[in-house]
Length: 287
Image 1 (cartoon, rainbow, N blue to C red):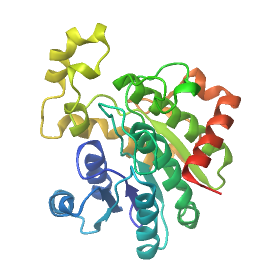
Image 2 (image 1 turned 90 degrees about the vertical axis):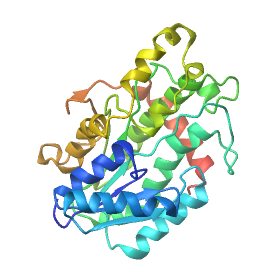
Image 3 (image 1 turned 60 degrees about the vertical axis):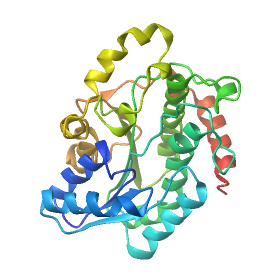
Image 4 (image 1 turned 180 degrees about the vertical axis):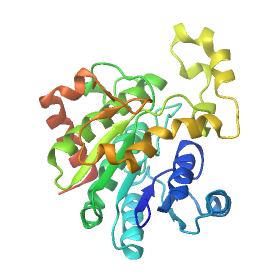
């Protein structure tokens, strides 16, 4: 990974931070993103110290707002000549239906529109890199069908189900992107369960009724563990970012064991992919 430039969104904590640490140990120049300047000191300093790699930088950008996504891409282009690996790690599991400043439901904005828009804006930087790769992280089980009439929870908001729908939409978008992109590989991976700020923020009310009886067990599984489970969960993204075994492999879904897994049926539906692509293009004002 030496001489490779890696950008990881949402990497000041959790799986993203552990991914950054692992790639830093491999010698990569790692740039992490955070929502505020206050996250600069601890995350960057900790990764530098633990990895022995001084080439760790931070860029600021709250991915819920498209202006910030543009700003983040602009910051990157102003400072770096190329991008070898983009890891779309940032995600959101909203507890209530809220609209962003762009008028987009927050889950859909962060989990679908933001990775699409950032990847689009950094495409020239990626193509300037050698064997450029884009890796996007999943976030748990997803339904088989994408509800195209409720993409932004316009009809109903069902907490974790709405989150899962947004993650399925993200998978659909990234597969279509992989079909359209040239000179850049794009894959999706599932990191598995980990104790992170996101999982620890889940409340019993966010779960479907039939699952709430298991909430105490869920909380036990996601209690703080010093980053151990997040480090384990980072292995999928680290593998896709660094392994020669996936050189040239694109449009695939990898499980926690770094094996190619089956896509949900919705991802394989060409009409669904094309329709969603048009919707996200319009929402992100990509021309």
